Length: 96
Image (tube, rainbow, N blue to C red; front, side, top):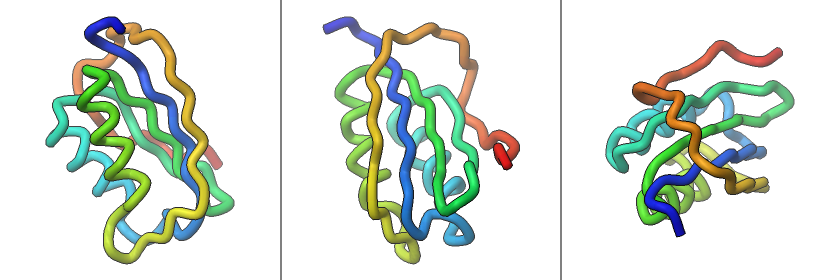
């Protein structure tokens, strides 16, 4: 396994209007990850993160749980090679 990977996740459920994006940013900083998070509409949130496989696994576990008011019903996960294109972790404009 390489020392950096990319994780692309789409979460659905009660993930909008509950602080999910703020939670994702907080968790990304905690796990030393770069990337972004945004709302997709239709009760979905998209996350792209890069970092060590161990930190990404911990981040993914936190996303599956979500913040206290969230309810994550499904998680689509796609592992990819890291590109190194991000300087930090940010919230992006919604995709709807």
